[in-house]
Image 1 (cartoon, rainbow, N blue to C red):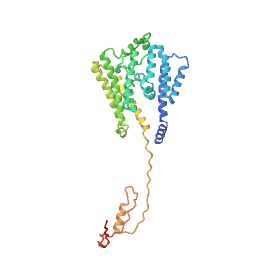
Image 2: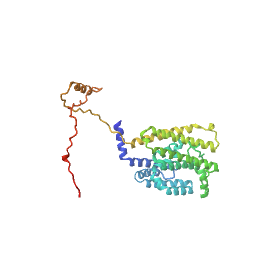
Image 3: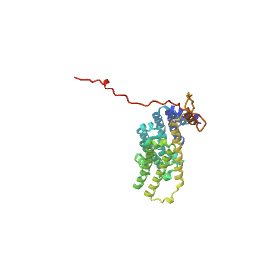
Image 4: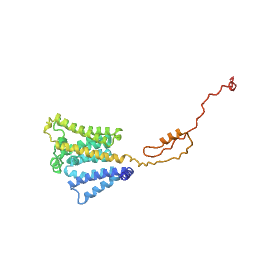
Length: 361
């Protein structure tokens, strides 16, 4: 088992950048495939080729893979609404540098609607902080919360994160809301679910801020040195603190701004998201840290016996040496060699004739 762990660690460290690029490229290709499968607007057999091109290009050139994926999605979005396609392409161009540089984080953010369907959305702010640190985790958490709300609102869903989990945006809902709208009407439809009134706008903004702050808190704690001295329990503790903060923040905002009675809430999806988020984020981080941290080398313990020449000594010394040369396991130690008595030191006699007086001009 130790040999397998050492081999896996060696391979990962040698090809770490390639492994991470493959994971991000495959994730982006899968997202593109999900969209093209739900919106079959391309001729037959084109969708698998586009997905394969995104994956293969992403292994070596993440920026080019990001641009290919963006261009491939413009036409399906155009079939829904011209102005949605223009807005999507403009945002894709403006965000191409950070989105392609942090391609793994981009995939994690874009996958939030799929993860929310299976109650896995709380893993996003936790992994954002654990993997990308304080500042990047803050923005990744905010972007994930905002994107989930925008897409849910586009499909006509309730975008409160307390009830959004377990639901999935549908293509029919998006088409029904945006078909035949003009540019200003399209923008109004995008903003309207977030801001039907000032209290709701504040509620949604604070939910987004909660995700961002929790991700930043995780990133701040994960950079502490004591984390590695208490691994893996420290990772589990950080994830638990983040889950409690995220859940407590959602409940506090619901009671404060929406005047919801806590006893009337359905806690089953809430607890499911908390448990799955804690388990999956902690497991992934423990696996990553196990591959990152060096594997302890195998230690070989050898007993070396040094021959000692024994000399004649008094019976008292011989008996003491024999008694101290035996250990509790029956192994022998080299016996100390007795030394003869040294003469006592005497100070030298004073001799004034040896003094040399120098006169300096």
